[in-house]
Length: 389
Image: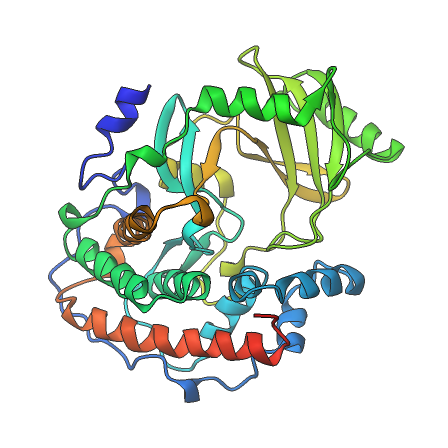
């Protein structure tokens, strides 16, 4: 398994699958004029609490206030809690973006990429489908650059992201691969994760993990009985409370189970909100959402993990907690951090390949100017909202 993953991690391969589906093939040579860069005067509405609140209709006022308070702990937390606002704000411009629409990551930032173990294959890819969907490719890479700056405040990393993206979009043989030392041992990841989260055959309650109510237990038991893709041997169940991040205020449940592979694991049921991409410019929502995204990003076709279910009147994704591991920005050395930023930008470019046609020389300057506008806009919004650092 390790050899297979490392073989995919050549200096250019980045453990990436070639483009699949509607984004397949290299860019054409047809000319593509570039519109004006994103400038401060392009926006008509304030990027403030009322604007952000008005988009998050799935939360009640109390849940939103808790999430809002948590978002003011750092600039990247502020952006991460308002992905819908990023897309809606950018789409409010009357001027078009360059390139065309593709299947986007939607919430591209360093720790929303990671290692995926799916269909017996390990790859480095998009690790978070919450906000994925159709959007202009330019919006996707702009989000990544803005997030990189809000996370690290390092202009050199911003430039490296832009350079890597433009190089790979121009010629995917120039993509930069992820450092293979960041790949986890998935067997150890699962064993350690289960041992840490359980004791005497039960989930350890405490902190954010609380007991389910009787109504929740009834609903979860009924779901397991009716859903053939879920393991039938359930040792315990609990609810996780999240007050920060993009999914704050949404319901999340853990099922401690004997997996379909006869190994103990934890299935997470995570409530879904409208994807951020659907609150910005897009032609149509995805149909068969997780089937499309797993095939497009991971090259995965099996339907036994990462699938949608209905529970307690809501839509949830069911996923094994130990089949993916995101990169941790705080755990990376300076060199590995730079490599991760460049490899993730390369991965985005490859998935965006059909958005770009003709000479991409103007793309670098467009991204530099537009990203600086948006970085300043989001930093100013954070400061105006009372951000603490």
